[in-house]
Image (cartoon, rainbow, N blue to C red):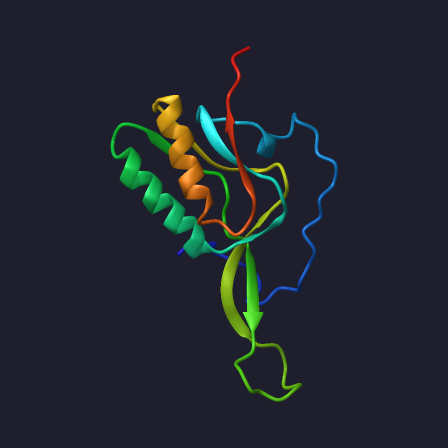
Length: 141
């Protein structure tokens, strides 16, 4: 799945996803590659299998006409202990990798598609994600 090739530690400490006030000049808030995209409205974690299901459904609909950019990547490892295990005895094994998402961050971008098709496609795909998202379009300057 989506996980880093090299990482320093097998297990990480749990940290909060901080949502500072972000200006719109920030790299993660602008459409840099495509014309249409999905923008997160709330903060959260996205698992790699959710990213993969969105990628598969986008590529199935777009085929060879359009181009897809994935702007999120799994960088946080989450650990869990098995069910019915007593307290203590250390931290659990690494369970899955997750991608931290801030509110206002661009998740996916597409291009070379008509507006109506792109809007319907990205709306349908957004139901596969665990956070609230919004369709956005690049404005011409």
